[in-house]
View 1 (spheres, rainbow, N blue to C red):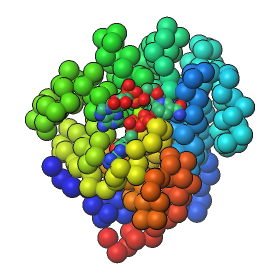
View 2 (spheres, protein in one colour; view 1 turned 90 degrees about the vertical axis):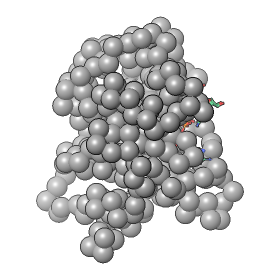
View 3 (cartoon, protein in one colour; view 1 turned 180 degrees about the vertical axis):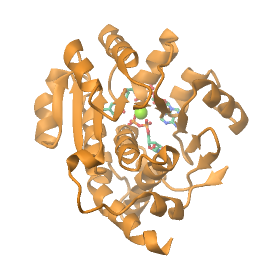
View 4 (cartoon, helix red, strand yellow; view 1 turned 30 degrees about the vertical axis):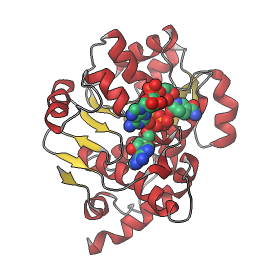
Length: 280
Ligand SMILES: NC(=O)C1=CN([C@@H]2O[C@H](COP(=O)(O)OP(=O)(O)OC[C@H]3O[C@@H](n4cnc5c(N)ncnc54)[C@H](O)[C@@H]3O)[C@@H](O)[C@H]2O)[C@@H](O)CC1
Ligand SMILES: Nc1ncnc2c1ncn2[C@@H]1O[C@H](COP(=O)(O)OP(=O)(O)O)[C@@H](O)[C@H]1O
Ligand SMILES: [Mg+2]
């Protein structure tokens, strides 16, 4: 396994060109947040905005509209149960996050099925949380798109059939190939499986063990993938690194680092890596 280095991240996070606008930095759609788990999709969407995505739209349960806008006025919203609206929005974006707080009821399954049916081959689809569990429990066929799975160990057990404790590099690699996407297996020392290489993260720690931390990572991966799109693997690896890098920085003085605190520090961390580019 290749340990992820600061050098790789510095190479990936580019300084922004001057002659640009919001359309230059990607369009992301985040799909999730039922009445119980609204916070999950707010964190995912916030992470995408704070990671520099030009335009973020959130498809969620209408009960979350007011709280989302109060926390994140930069995001636009649609109802994730409105099939026509969701289909139209899916046509306009570069990357989609599906799963944070989506839930696993009939409505959630319907929303996931619509996204799978509508997504196009050139679009990036980040599959997290409830969406992973729905795929596993309903044996759903996967769409033709640039797939990125972000399971924690329990979700990976459900999706891959490999029990926690037996999730070796060799076994995980076989399933990653079958899934035909990138797999970010989240845990202490997260592993990232790609067609060419397997990466390992040596940052992050128990200060990150708060609900919503993985939801936050999905938005970062989406925004990094649309902005640094020439190298999808490097974008995913860099987002994963910066997420834990911020946690470790805050963890020097904090016993726990909350997901919303990580989000607040993303712009500063990205500036750090963009500036250190020339020394890399
Ligand atoms: N504020 C919110 O709205 C939140 C919503 N969430 C959503 O809730 C839904 C269910 O996700 P959960 O992950 O909570 O539930 P799961 O039941 O899928 O998994 C959680 C359990 O898995 C076990 N586990 C074993 N290894 C683990 C590892 N390496 N990392 C994490 N857990 C591990 C733990 O016992 C843990 O309680 C998802 O849609 C998720 O996005 C959660 O993200 C929590 C925060
Ligand atoms: N002890 C730990 N060491 C390193 N990273 C951790 C630790 N605990 C949690 N994390 C990180 O926090 C995130 C948790 O993801 P996840 O369980 O999906 O959270 P949620 O679904 O609640 O948002 C992952 O990125 C994981 O690597
Ligand atoms: Mg999660």
